[in-house]
Structure formats: C-alpha cells, structure tokens
Length: 438
Image (cartoon, rainbow, N blue to C red; front, top):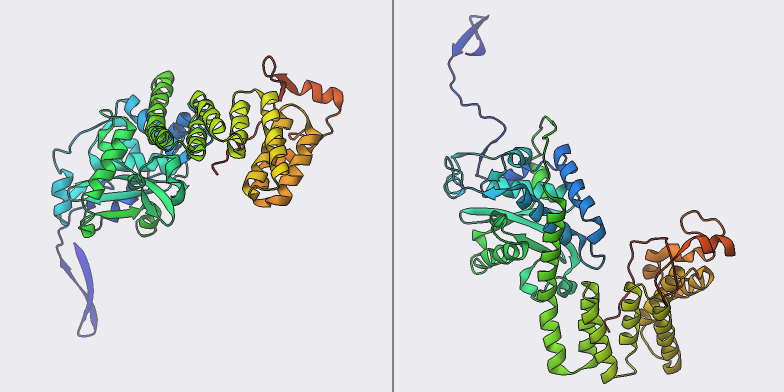
C-alpha cells in the first residue's frame, strides 16, 4: 500500500491505493540501450583478478616482447576459458535475438563469476566474462552489437600504422582513435582457435559496412560512466584452472599460426621483388616473432643482394643477440657502426639503434663502461628512445643496486652464455634488442 498525504478541511488525512510492480534481481536487463550490459562487466572481482593473474603467471616465460601484450593476453585468456570447458549455449528462456528485438523484454545476464562457475553461457554472458577478464588486467574492451548478436572487442595498444606487426591485412582491425582494435567472436570458444574467432568477428562486423547504423561499437569505459558495475558479494569460487602445460601448448600453437599468417606474404613479396629491403623487412618480422632461423636466412639474402645494407647488418647482430651469441653480436654491431662512419650517412633512427644495441650487448658481456659510453651517445641523438634503456647508463655500476662493480664484482655478476659467445649479465630488462626496418 502506498500512502499519499493530503488535507481535508484543514486536517491531514491519508488516502491509500494499491500498486502492483515486478521486482527483478540484479541480473535483469532490458535492451533499450545496448550499453547497459557494461554494468555486468565486474573487472574488480577478486575471483577474476586471481584467475587473470594465474593466466599471466603461467605464460610469463613465453611472452613475446615484440608483440602487443594486449593481443597476447587476449589469446591466452581465450584458450584458458576453453581449457576450463567453457562453451556457448543459447539461453532457452530469452535468446539474445529475441531480447534485442524487444526493448520491453526482460533478459537475464550472468555475472562473470557466475558464468565461470557454470562454464556455459549465451553470447551476452560470454561477452561479459571475456571483457571483464581483459579489463581486469587493464586492457580496454568494447561491446560489439549486430542484429541478433553481441560479442567483444579489445584495444591492442598498437598504433594504426604498425598493423603489419600483428596481421598483414589492415581490414582485420578497427581503427579507434589511432589505435588498432581486434574483434573476437567469443561464442566460438571451445570449438575454434583464437585466430578463427578473430576472423569471424571481423567478418560479422564488415557485413554491415554499408549499413553502419545496424551495428554498434561501445567502449566499456564510456558505457560504465552511465551504467556503473553492479555490486557483488565476493566469495572464493574454488576454481580449478586446468592444465597449465596444455595452456602453454595452445598459446604456442596460436602464436605459430599467427607467425605463418604474418610472415607468408612478406616472404612472398621478398622473393618476388628480389629487393634487399624486402628481405630485411621480412627478416625483422621473423626475428620479432621468434622465427630466428628464417630471420637469419632473410638477412643473409639481403646482404648477398646488397653487402652495404647496414640495416640488415644491424639486424643480423640482433638475431645473434637473441641467440645469446653476444660476442658475434658485438662484432656485427661494431661493423655496422664503422660502415655508417665510413659512409657518413644513415638516419638518426639507425644510428640510435646501433648505439643502443652496442650498449645492450656490452652490458650483457659485463663491459659496463663501454655500455654506458654507447648509451650516452644514443641519448644525445634520441633522448626519447634512449630513456627506455636507462639501466644502461649505470656504466660500471650494478643496475640493480647502483653500487660500483669493480673487476671482482663484475666477474661474479655474469654467467656463461655458451662456447664462443662471451659472458652474459644476469641483469634483465623488459626492453628487447632493437631491429631496423629501413
């Protein structure tokens, strides 16, 4: 009963009337605004944070430093959910096709923790779960809608001009604010690999290129400014995360498929053109994707065509560095530097890369004073690039402690890198050796 306060002849009286209403739980939603579903993306849920942390931890040693970390985690999370036994199932009570067509129909959306526990969901449930998992580690996501369907997209963090580092086809991405986004058909989880889900996600979106009003792209961060995440009671889900070795194997398989996708057209182009620069570009891409044998062969071919190709010479040294052949790498970088000095030419970018690579290699060999000297030269040429390698400025000091390295101390802080390769410092950096694509 609802009381209404009114007055009669100057005296307060009450009038009551019956009101009937339906009270829905926090999982209910009407599709009058597709952005509402963002309220179910609970990326602060401790169960999701723990699961995401586990995924990252088991892949820590196999992450590629040259490839978008956002793309790699998205691949890992997709495989991890499949390993849990997650699969797509149409909601028998309110399928998304029917719910989307009626703004008054009340749909039910599962929270990510509920879908994780149940291990099945329809397109909106799986989109919410996948998006929340990515958002948990700081990857921006978006909701993608087309007639009768919803799925997920994420920001790779890669500038639009660098699309070829992830895929040879520019149309495989959406350009949003100068950065590349990948669309993932999440309902294929458990039945197709990540690259297939990516291909299908793009194809579904492109079907409406001539009717863009029929599709939607809603960044979750923007949607949650209107529809805040629902509150939840956090409890331990007691999840069994699956076989770690199987996850690493699946990630390796996905990376192998991606490597073939990226490198095949580049190799074909180099063979067709016979140009040193095309062989060099192919080799740089191969090295950055971990195909070191292909990279070495490509750089050898580039240098065979043009022995004065400084870029290929630098890149050969970078491959040797990745193979832990530090003495050979140092010789290659020294040769590249002498060639640049002799010609008196070369872009600032090439010079900076040579100097940084010399500094990194000398540092790996324990030659800290030489490393510091090369770093200071690089910093004078390109402070922005050099700032990523500040640890190289330590010269004869331990980059971890800042204390003087002395001869005896330096000896104990290096480890053998194999016959003929010199001595490699145990100090680590997240910034990889540089390649030149000019």
